[in-house]
Length: 203
Image 1 (cartoon, rainbow, N blue to C red):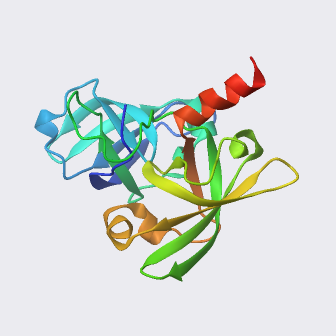
Image 2 (image 1 turned 60 degrees about the horizontal axis):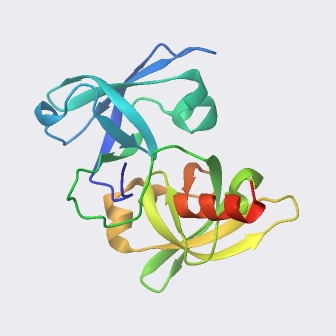
C-alpha cells in the first residue's frame, strides 16, 4: 500500500524486452538508497505498483507485464522519462495522502492547465469506466500523486472531466510540474468510492 506522497522523481535509464505481447524490463535511476531496497520490494512508479527484481547503486529494475502495459502509460516510457516514485507504506508511517493501492483504474488525459492564485489548476478527462467514482472533495491519485478533486463535470458518454489544484511544492516535487494538455496520466480512484458505488448498486 502507498499514500500518494511522492518521495523521489526517478528516471528510466534503460528499456528492454519491448515488443507486442511481451513483458518489459525497466531500469530506473533513483536517489533512494538502493542497498536498503530489498529484491521483491514494492515501489509505486507513476501510480503503478511494481516489484523490484534487481538493483545496484542508484538504480533498481522492475518488469511490467503486457497487461500492465496495455492498461497504463508504462508502454510510453522511454529512456529519461521522469517517474514519480514512492516506497511501500510501513506499519506506523504517517498517512499523509490517502490509501493508494498502485492498481491503476484507467488512463486519463490532461485537457487544460492554468494558473489559479498560487497554484496550478489541472483539468483531466477520466474514462467512462471510472467517471462515476470521482466526487468533489474526494481523493484521486494522478500518476501516483494524491490529490483532492475540486470539481467534476459529467459527460453524456459516462466520462468525466475533473479539476484539481496543485500547489507549488507538489509541482516541484513530482512530475506534475511538467504536465501539459494532451498528456496521458495513470488514474486510481479512492478505494472507499469503489466500495460505496458497489453497495449502492446492490451487487
